[in-house]
Image 1 (cartoon, rainbow, N blue to C red):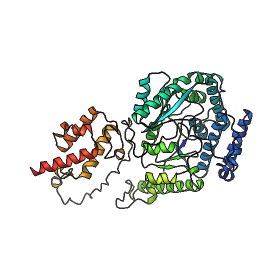
Image 2: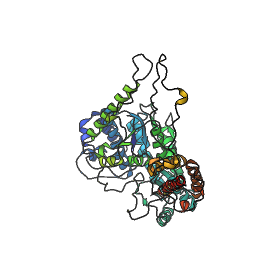
Image 3: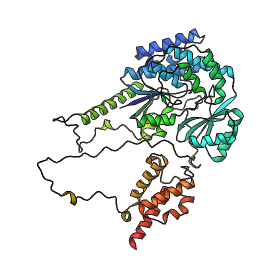
Image 4: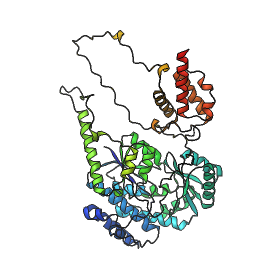
Length: 514
């Protein structure tokens, strides 16, 4: 199983004692916390690990620098636990300042240098003293960006694309309040975020310049693990660490696209190195059914990690068996009738994942990486626009081809073998038509088919504009040989996949009865 470690950005302050068990179990955790404490003391800050290791809920917080370093300590300690238990990441991804934690976990930066750079970042942001806010909105990035552009201020921008229905707008406080009122009028859920420093807007250019000018340059190592940058849209190479952190202050964070790219490249499990399921909520929303693990949210974090390792071993064994050479060395032996072992299934039901990661909500407000809850069931669902990335799906295994021995003549002449044909349109049932529609619409819109609900309004819920609906109805008309379908205006004004499927089934039945 190929796992990606995800590092949260600015989240709620960790609970007291959250690292007690990890501190007692692992020498690497004790050493890392000691190094963070030493760096903190050198910068005039209190020991970071004391509250995280001791079983108490008190905090002697002295500004955002301590909060950042506590989040760093939790993230890097979780990373060391995972490595100690045998989980090896194919990549590490960080959300916003979490990218700095990712660089340290991967070995590109020392723990001390990452701590110093985090504090330097916080200090230049505090010195700028910008009066901004961040607003999480429960719609896709395209709609959120359109809303920001409507107000037309250079510092009011789409800051983060977290999930298909979760974006973040950053800007001046007065304008954010205006955006919030407009979102409420549109029925879009929104939440102002309690973060020490609103970022990811051109308004942070001054702080970015100050960081580049004042932050000490730090040695940059080759690293052990791959780090994928959500704001650069590529792997981190030999980029200067100070420039990386400074550049992120004004750049958009494209977590949704990064998650889907990694999954498309083979990642089938995402492990959050934080206390709460924050970034993994974005993963679940972006790739339904993918396996997500948040060890520190489990009653026994170590056991949760060991279960992940066991799953990985089962999958690896199964893949090795599929790839094993045949006895004559001609290639793999594929036993089509042999079922895959239970551990070979790399995805779990979403409901099961939510149960596994369920934890009490943190007392402190979560940051701009916190998912925005949908409104109460009676309220209309938030609209969403087409996702611009290609749907992420696991390709079906190719059918096994068994060649007949050369000396044995085929029992059926090739001309007598009829090609496989699609079902007769006249005999299609509702489920068959709905499945085809989901595939057709998903390919056109860039949605995984499973995300397309049969009762979702094509315009109201999925954001499919009328011109696109006309084009799609044309494709449905051609597919099912129903020329009158493209002119059915009722399927445009209140179209759902259910209505279209029922119309197709009814029209084909009428055509067959003539």
